[in-house]
Length: 130
View 1 (cartoon, helix red, strand yellow):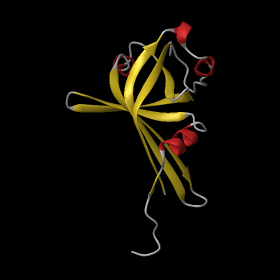
View 2 (cartoon, helix red, strand yellow):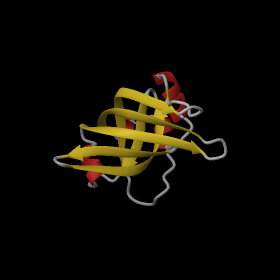
View 3 (cartoon, rainbow, N blue to C red):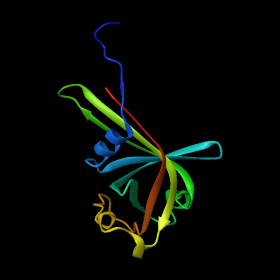
View 4 (cartoon, rainbow, N blue to C red):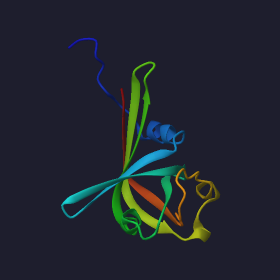
């Protein structure tokens, strides 16, 4: 087919730059033979992704040293463009006294006791632009 552009691979730098302007992500993980995906509000601080969870939730349990993939997408229907970034890494809880000020300011959309701060230390950052 002609006239249909191929997805462009984004550099890690471009991925991080795009992530800084978004606030909703999906966190995915696998346990046994099942997979789970949960939306979260997030922020980027010092080369890592940060979000808050309820400590006893399934995601809260996974974020105690477990592997996760965090996906953020952006669509623009007016010019039919889009991008997608995936950050893979280990999710660790962080003591409230060690949470950077920027991460403390995560704007949460749902109400609830999201008292556990999580830092995803990235192993791999990939992205594509359409």
